[in-house]
Amino acid sequence: MERKPAAAAALVVVVVVVLAAALFSVGEAAHPRRCVTSTYRRKHQASDDMPMDADVFAVPPGRNAPQQVHITLGDQTGTAMLVSWVTVEAEGNSTVLYGRAADRLDLAAEGTTTRYTFYNYTSGFIHHCTLTGLDHGTRYYYAMGFGDTVRTFWFTTPPPPGPGAPLRLGLIGDLGQTPDSNSTLTHYEQHPGDAVLFVGDLSYADKHPLHDNNRWDTWGRFSERSVAYQPWIWTAGNHEIDYAPEIGETVAFKPFSHRYPTPYRASDSSEPYWYSVKMGPAHIIVLSSYSAFGKYTPQWKWLEQELKRVDRETTPWLFISAHVPWYNSNNFHFMEGEPTRVQFEQMAVDARVDIVFAGHVHAYERSHRYSNIKYNITDGKCTPVADRRAPVYIVIGDGGNIEGLADELTWPQPAYSAFREYSYGHAVLDIKNHTHAHYAWYRNHDGNKVTADTTWFTNRYHMPNHDDSVYSNTAYV
Ligand SMILES: *[C@@H]1O[C@H](CO)[C@@H](O)[C@H](O)[C@H]1NC(C)=O
Ligand SMILES: *[C@@H]1O[C@H](CO)[C@@H](O)[C@H](O)[C@H]1NC(C)=O
Ligand SMILES: *[C@@H]1O[C@H](CO)[C@@H](O)[C@H](O)[C@H]1NC(C)=O
Ligand SMILES: *[C@@H]1O[C@H](CO)[C@@H](O)[C@H](O)[C@H]1NC(C)=O
Ligand SMILES: *[C@@H]1O[C@H](CO)[C@@H](O)[C@H](O)[C@H]1NC(C)=O
Ligand SMILES: [Fe+2]
Image 1 (cartoon, protein in one colour):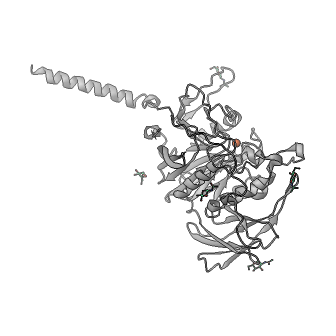
Image 2 (image 1 turned 120 degrees about the vertical axis):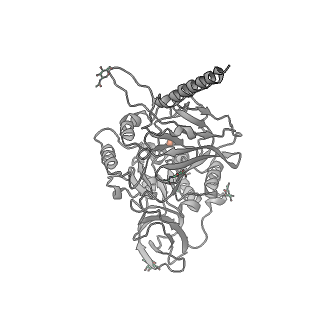
Image 3 (image 1 turned 90 degrees about the vertical axis):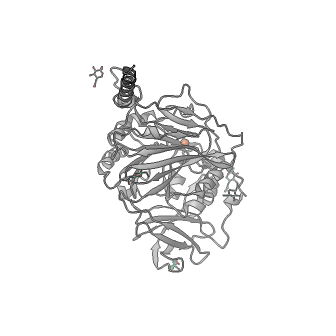
């Protein structure tokens, strides 16, 4: 009789020890990783672009008023801001006045003007002006349109590179200009970030006859309400290529490069389509899925050098943005990212990249930390495996565009896929400090903004062995 409690206690101890061993000693297999395919299905809706006379495309009032105002960083860290806008009636004035108060624009910068033609379309006067000498983390007001109609906007520069400051990063991709695009932007504006990392495919003008470039103009007017007030970091997508030899247009990226310049020289890049920026605690590397990326090409060489320049003590968070996903379990664009994955994945794992963002697939998907870098052509082995050194892959190509949703998943859901859903929406990454970032994906739920996938990411440099898949908290209807 006396011995029974002792025996029970011993049994409990054994069970606890065995469980603990199971949990803590087998490493990667310790935590069961959930693979969730959301059951939410949006109501069927047409994906046509908003009509040319939609309110969001209205031309601002006033003679030759600046329109399509947008900003992006003008140098690597945001002590310069690159302001762009279009005037249609006349070239007008390319000067931007700026300062710390709307009524005290005591600084001036002189811009440049460009135009381009595309088949029988001629663009308006496209102005680009870099505001320099800015302080970090500071609100500036800026105005342009002198001599005609002056318009005034404002932005806040990013915090200086450093591990301390928090950063809130909006994540939007494949936005287009449909009613769904408008919902996505509206939902993002309800709690906007400090900047948007845009993963490619802006206007989808190329879906219209002759790549109707008026649709680049409408997209510029539609997106102005956000991108005139905070920098969007641009990634080139396939709908930016605008390669149309059938109508004599053979210069890739012509409309995009005239309208959306990037600060690529500041990161020693030779082309606008791959470059890096540093905002507060984040070092963001933008790659081009549609520029040569094989070994020894300019992009490959630049990335190799750029990864050496990353300093995780100063910028603990390291991200890559590339339009085509390396991990995607949707039938749409299935395996299109394989060449880039094969070329860059080992580099990303070695560099302990925290997250790789992509778009292209018009759906949402978040991966567990997986890698597939063991491939060896002589033994043929090639299987993605759980790997805490590896990035998380996020596909956020769900802005809401004219092509509609990518609504065919592959089955079974692969083990690397943590959450997937074909809806429209956007995400926000809230970097809290050098070790933790909170992440949330917001679905456009029949017109409403609904939090549908949230998790915490721990930093791959400062907490390299931590299994952050334990935080995954998906609320799938
Ligand atoms: C360009 O050509 C198309 C097709 O012929 C025509 O519909 C359109 O009006 C033309 N646009 C201009 C600006 O001439
Ligand atoms: C443009 O406007 C600014 C601000 O009013 C003025 O200083 C500058 O002289 C103007 N430039 C031209 C070319 O008119
Ligand atoms: C777009 O959304 C805004 C709200 O953010 C609304 O005011 C506007 O009417 C919408 N336009 C269209 C064409 O849906
Ligand atoms: C490839 O794998 C085979 C079989 O495991 C091994 O014998 C060979 O050494 C590997 N080759 C390289 C270059 O690692
Ligand atoms: C970083 O942020 C996380 C989440 O807010 C918090 O739990 C943690 O204590 C913070 N770490 C430091 C060093 O402040
Ligand atoms: Fe795309």
